[in-house]
Length: 511
Image 1 (cartoon, rainbow, N blue to C red):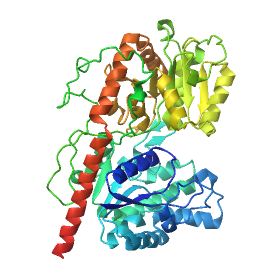
Image 2: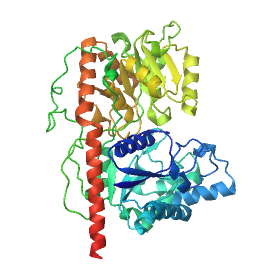
Image 3: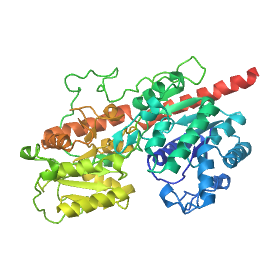
Image 4: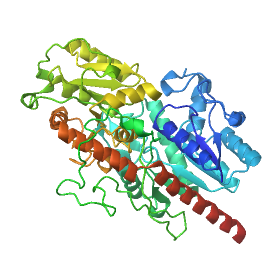
């Protein structure tokens, strides 16, 4: 099958791009042909198809909104790419005409390409499958957050709530552009032309159904992480500890014996728009998103108030990759909604022997704020490593005791959870959004209340027991292989693609 991939970046910037390159490689390895369509950038991975890419907003050396010089031309580009771009529509029609793909798979396009990619593809007679990486169809901010609190006002009371709160970047202009674009798209009914939506989590799928989208067009296929070989388990704690063979009391196992809550998308509705037939249930895969880290605390510190807790001085931290001391790990994007502050506050109430390592771009506004806090409080048991990738990233994950995901938002099956499972690391995650689909208390990690440092601290303490730590880690690894494998994702996705292509051909023949 020849597939046109649409994404607004062709370099690794976050979870969607990790997924893009992982699934592109798998499809290519299986004999499919993948044609990328994206936006020019000086950071792009080279491809012979970049002659079809469109020019970016503000220049090829600019990626993010905060980097734009807000000239009249750039402001007009922002509006056009958010609402509807005829330039992009012409470009995608051109690449379709020249390469003749069988199907278009859209991963992300918002604010950089516009939904004209959908119209352009449908006008050329192709089926369109759209993957949902976040809540962009339902929330102007994409994440249902306002001042770091969950907010569903736009979902329940209409988009004008976003304008009142200036919830996008704190800017009336940016919010107005998003609200305008969402209003226009709904009026145009452009998303009615999508043949099928891929939701990485049951939580996101249900939110879409609650908002009025047809359940038979929403297919739950969690993402996956690229698998490493047996070396991934080198350094995993308590390798010879017996794995827990059943979930903790109170959780019923799934149909295949896996823990309840681990995968609520086990039997996705795999219909294509207007088609009544359903595909066989497939095992699911998971995403690759950011994770947080926390360090174990003493029982006496578990009830201490973080702001008032005294922090004993620690010896200068040894680089985390040397693993001289055990540490909890957070890795991923360091932004407010990721809740890294919760992990730091949890560690502030712990003895200095408990170390937290934060791995990710530490030049963001949130990272700089948190580092200032550490300096002001004299905390030396938290280390910022900066951005790592490849073997350097794997070395840090391999030596961690566990991984933390302290998200404040409805996290959408984060990829880093799977990366942690791959190395046999238990995950401590906020009880929010899709995270309970990944983590089952007492089976492969623990859940804690979002933003509650004391609750997280208690869960860290539970992992002081080496036997428990080993059992949870082995269960995490086992669950990854059983529920979130690349094979399962590939089978479910290509089955959906084939159904969409077959239906499109039948419709053409009937005309």
